[in-house]
Amino acid sequence: MKAFSLAAVCLSALVIVGCGGNDDAPAQPQVIAHRGASGYLPEHTLGGYELAIRMGVDFIEPDLQISKDGSLVSIHDDTLQRTTNVASLFAQRNGGYKVADFTLAEIKSLTVLPTGTGKTSYPGFTPSAADPFKVPTFQEVVGFAQAQSASTRRRVGLYPEAKQADPVMEDGILKTLAQNNYGPQSKVFIQSFSDATLRSMRAKQVAQNNKIPLIQLGVAVTGKDGVASVGVISGASVTVLPLKDVASFSEGVGLLINNTTYPITKDYISQAHAAGLTVHGWTFAQADAMLAAAEYRKYLDMGMDGMFANYPDLGVGARDAFVKR
Image 1 (cartoon, one colour):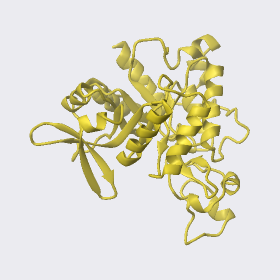
Image 2 (image 1 turned 120 degrees about the vertical axis):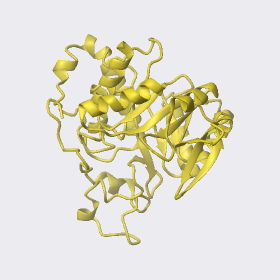
Image 3 (image 1 turned 135 degrees about the horizontal axis):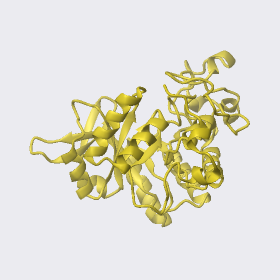
Image 4 (image 1 turned 90 degrees about the vertical axis):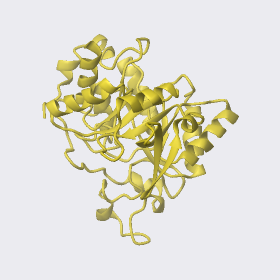
């Protein structure tokens, strides 16, 4: 993969402003850093988020779990062993290493390890955080995004996912965002695979007069009659929701790409747009630059509004090329 040079992409503070687009510019497809720059550095770490921001993404994505003592932490799995060194520091609890069985202090003692194509460093990049590869809390991610927004002079968006269908998770996300002055006009989406979670969060948002946009995750279902719906995934089952229903409690859908059973088509995206829904796709994980460019262009040509990218520089490059074209 092509090495990334901060100096080559952003020669000055003035140029850095343009790396991710202008908030006052016309709407353009958004690039979301999937778990940070997860193809390059340990996922869900301040170091990974920062590299993605330097590469020009519009949003960073913290997946959220709940610690034993009720803190929201940024980690994808509900267990710790895939992405951290927990097994070298702690014995199993209740037969495993569930996040919910460890306190925040214990989780903070862990180091996040690279997975897949990730490494512990990236050419030309030095993280600014003191501990760039620890498990961050949601508040730390929020504060980091705000600090990066100030230093880069462009708004870094937040795209948290409620990984647990739990009122504690709902309340924690909404409270943290509200305490940090995020509202309906902020650069933020909240996502979940659980429509029950999103319906509950929307009711709470209405009561709090703070309707932050919600995104229903799932698959693109097109009936024999050609009518598009959203398939909500729960274990091995898929529950089909009409687009009109999804639009009653959320502002968009996040759909699985490259799925032959539930393919995303231009007509599907058109129907979603007609229902008032934004369409984002997950996950763009192609590491080869040429293959990635073709994959991005395929979905951008269909009208997709945002893409979750493992390799943020490839996503930003493809998006910028599409906009210019």
